[in-house]
Length: 146
Image 1 (cartoon, rainbow, N blue to C red):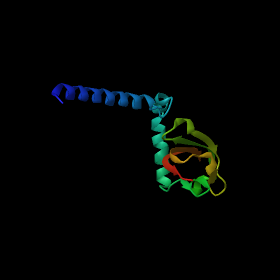
Image 2 (image 1 turned 90 degrees about the vertical axis):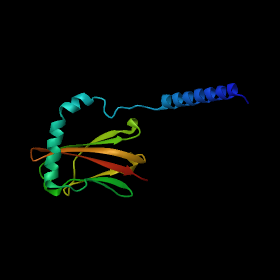
Image 3 (image 1 turned 180 degrees about the vertical axis):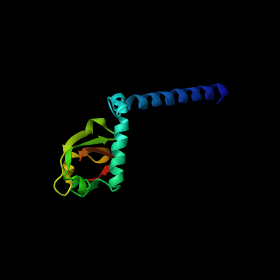
Image 4 (image 1 turned 30 degrees about the vertical axis):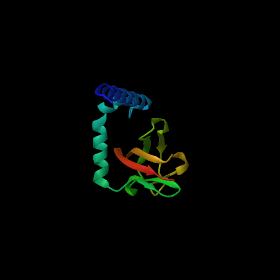
């Protein structure tokens, strides 16, 4: 085999690799983490303040996972003045499986969600509520296994 044939094979292999990369890039989805990120960025300082409020009271995990459920456990001293809360579950690999819930804990500060609402995989959980006229916020990672 002479150098002309080798050069042709190298060029064909290069073209094949480039077409494979284009095909793989075309199949990937590029979902944004948040659709209205600009408005949320403007309010980010309030989230930082709410996070500091919660860290001053407790650094314990808020999301607890068992074999049949996912629970949200807020600190007991916040139950009495609890006004309203929101949970946002963001599936890291598929935006279509994101969901949010309004929550209100029981007298022990516990709110239970059945695992049937979740698909297996990683979630980023945003927890936000108001208690005693103060806002509280935390982000936690959750890996759901069935």
